[in-house]
Each structure stands twice: as C-alpha cells, then as structure tokens.
Length: 363
Ligand SMILES: *Cc1c(COP(=O)(O)O)cnc(C)c1O
Image (cartoon, rainbow, N blue to C red):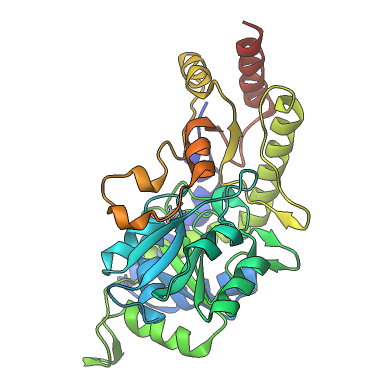
C-alpha cells in the first residue's frame, strides 16, 4: 500500500505526459513558451482567480508574495504555529518576523481571535494556511485584515481546488500561493508552484520579481529572483489538470469511506458547511497516536505525522516569534496522524487500514 501513489497515477497518464514532454524536449525551449501561459490561464480558470503565474516552488511563491506586498526586514507577519515550516521560514528568510498564532481544533486553521491577539504596530500582514486541503476561514480573516489595514496571503500549497462558499482556494486573498511538489494534490515531476491575485498591480510586480525584476531583456526595474517554473513541469501540470476534477471526486469518496468507518474510534476530519476539501491529507486525531502509528506501520500500512512539532518549538525560529501560548497547536502536534490518501486508493486497501484500526482498539 502506498501513502500517496504517484506510480499508479503515472501509469494512467503516461501516454499523455510523454507526448507533451517530448514536444518540449524536441523544441529545446525549456524556459517560458506558450505552455507556461496556457497553464497559467487554465489554473486561473480552474480556481476563479483573475491572474496566475507559474513559479519555481510553493516556498518561492510565498517569498514572491511577501516581496510584492512590500514586506521589509523587521516587519511582523502573523502565521499559524501548526503548519509546514515554509509558511513561516520564508518570512524569516527575507528578514521579517513570523509571529505564531494558534489554530482551530476542528479545522486546524488559524483563528481570527489569535490573529487579533498578535497584532502590533509592526504587523504588516497575515499568512493563512488552508491546511490538509480545507480552506481557512476566509471571511473572518479578510475582515481582520481590512479592519487593521494589513494584507493577507493564502498559503494554498495543500488546497488548490478546494471550495469556500461560492469561491475557491487561491482566488480570495490579496495574493494566494500553491505548490506543485509531487505529493501535493496537484503535483508536478519536481518542484513547482504558482501565485494568484485579483490585483493587476500585484500581478505585474510578481511577474517582474519572478524573473530578476526584468521588464525588457536586460532592463531590470527592481531586484528580483529566478523563481520561474520549468516548461517541462508546466506540461505535466496541464495534463494532470485534465484529470484533476475526477481525482478530487475520488479523494472525497475515499475520505467519506474512511470517516464512515473510523468515526466511532478516532476523531475524524471535519469539513465545515459550504466548504469542500481537496483532501491533501486525511488526518485523524487520537490520544494513543504513537502506539497506533507503530502498529499500522508494522502491518505495512504507511502513515505520516503532519506535523509532530508546532513551529515555535523548532530551534530555527527565534523566541520573539511566540508572544502568546498556542495550546491547540501543541495538542494537535501530539495527536494527529495522516492515513494513506490518494485518488487511486481502493476500498480493499481502505478496508485493510480500517480493520487494523479496529483491531488496535480491541486489543
Ligand atoms: C508544501 C508546502 C509548502 C512549500 O511548498 P514547496 O513547493 O515544497 O516549496 C508551503 N506551505 C505548505 C503549507 C506546504 O504544505
């Protein structure tokens, strides 16, 4: 059993992918070209954003967004304590200070109350993560940002395609980011990502920043990065996008089947009304997490802990990043466990997982 079955996916889309990759190889045009622009249009159409730009990774997408929004060294950016490190480390990377807010015990996403507590005169913005595939509380976060005159970024690395009321992930925040890391719901065959915005001026700045601040060949209007997406990755994304809606349905089905059969034994994921998760992870909560993990792994069932340490306990961050306690993040880190989840998971595999969990609680 695979935690995330990329081999199966490749075997199904192999012909389409090889045809498109061969075209790029034959053209010897590896950077830029029409496939990038086409992919960007398709991504924007899929999520309802006005503008999309392919970039080199989900992490670079965050750096580009912070730079485009004018973040300077010493500025404070409020981020959740319970997320992948890149949400916060990209803030530190440009000399700004990530300030850790706590998250909701049910959705695992940053709360408006915790944002409020952490606002100071130095706060320039918020990064809300749509963790495990479910959108953060966009309305409440947007309201907080407007109230305080600051920006907000959606880190949608795990949520491209997710639904929030009548909108989608990556189409609401001032700037949104996603990742095409291979194991994300929409994954490339290497690193990649995208940024999204509704704002034309942000779009132009992001576009310059992604390519050395260059407006015309060898004319540089600002200090930028090399944060472009490879054309080979863009064609992989284009092929996978053709199948993405079907994959999301299959993920949803698998998640529902797990929940129906596990909910008496463990705390299963909750998707709030009006939202659809893309199930980047299927994450349960239980007190005996480490025990169950060992038992499942011994039976050949792969599991993962996203994430075992809340970010304020990572030695990479300075003490000034934690102003208020984050008890929910701490508790989640001790209790969460992700089960195998991908669009090609069979009922047979799921039954093996469910049976193993049942036996664990019987013993
Ligand atoms: C994966 C991930 C990132 C980073 O994306 P990369 O493409 O690996 O750089 C950032 N934030 C979150 C929440 C992620 O899950």
